[in-house]
Length: 344
Image 1 (cartoon, rainbow, N blue to C red):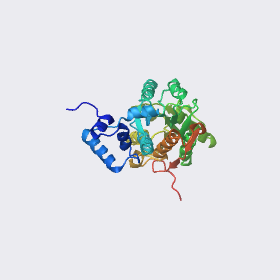
Image 2 (image 1 turned 30 degrees about the horizontal axis):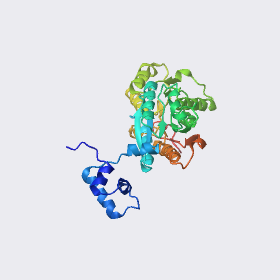
Image 3 (image 1 turned 120 degrees about the vertical axis):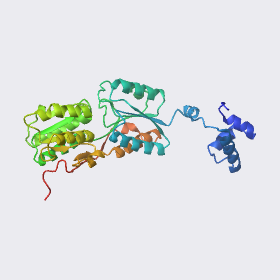
Image 4 (image 1 turned 120 degrees about the horizontal axis):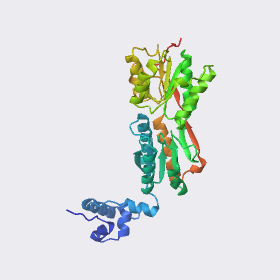
């Protein structure tokens, strides 16, 4: 068995040509004739030669690798964002290193160190739920390694951010429920230390105020939006109240689908007894009975926008210092889970 790594010098010796000619031939350089290129490629394939891109990249001070840190991978929204990032990045010759923080600041910091040590050319981040200290990004900023935040952003860091208008989205969701006749609207959301949940909460409150409905703290609940958390709060709190809410705005579709199931099992009718609006436009929102009204969050489009901005910067076609915040369009998609009033 051969364990020695084949080099361009081995190829050059066997072909009786210079190592420079071999190197240029492998890069399809126009100065090398086709016959010589074919000899080089044929021998390289026969001997199992592999290009040492790592050494080449070090010489160029680029690895053509982009780091991506997300809170969790088991999210349809995150999957669609990553798909968009990968499509644009791969087409531009960049590879991705993807890691998840599992919603923990400590893990996010470890991931950031790993990305730095792997010499990524740029970093794309959506923050963990409990991240409060942002010092782990300082090394990237000091070394002029571009960092782009998306969805869950660090507002204190001056860098490019890509997101939707979450306040407007929260407003539209709540306003729709009000227009359907709801007056006691329960809002269940994630940690409001994160901009996405805080902004959606602000939109919820603004819609209530604009329609002269007093904000009630007992109709506002924050948790980690897991199935267990949703089950606990609905079964052990909401369903035991003397008066049930007549509307629910919950900030992701999987939680909305689970809540819908619990309410139906308790004998409530959706939307007659409680109208429901989710968030993200995940597949599950379209297959429940009834289908769930939601906010369309264009994950794939967001991923493509992020990657395009970063790749253009890395390839010298644009400068991130001139880009601050990119806001993508979103919309309310009305389905049966909230439609009490039919359009005439």
